[in-house]
Image (cartoon, rainbow, N blue to C red; front, side, top):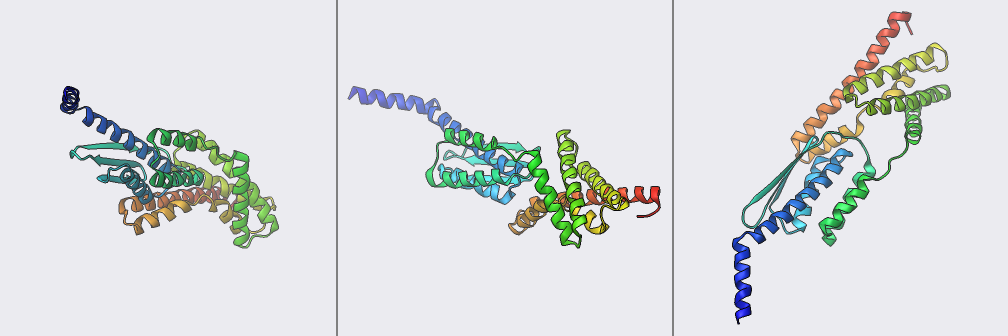
Length: 280
């Protein structure tokens, strides 16, 4: 009887001292950090904002925290979890860089489904996220080759012949390496698009001047086509349809600015060419 009394006293002291409360807060803190990291990986690699919000809420509900709210934009994640004592723990994460790596997006999606079905321990999730984050990308030669091939395909689609196809392939290859170099220097994306559009047009005009290509329009269009923010536009439309107006509008503006930058670069190179040579 005395032993039971001692156990009750110890439990009461621990409860009054906030032991269980602190343990609950620690669990929520670990959960919210993992959920935020998953969302960060999704956003940084081209995922949709509404999908990130949905993933975060489902994950927290799986760990018995249904009072979860998430607000995601292309540049930030905000999460709050309320426990049974009506105490709220929040986390804000700024997204500084974004690229396109659909392999990582797919892996994070698969992991979120696994968590929802198996309730994977949080410590194990961190290790899985580490492995996803370290997933190797294609090397520069491979990406440049297929970028050039896609540019050539667009050239043919817009009426280019075999010579135009080959010229566009070379321009696309050079352009991809040029973009990689500028990104390594951490040049602003707006100026990367301006510079890439300018270089693509100058190389296309030079190929016509040297009589390497025939169809100027097809070469120029094929060269700059892959600079267009196709995934950004697609995600913007999907976000707007899903009701995420802030994210949808911000992505639309981002795509619009990218298109303007490409147009500025292309127009600048045409203007220089006409000034120097008086014609095409």
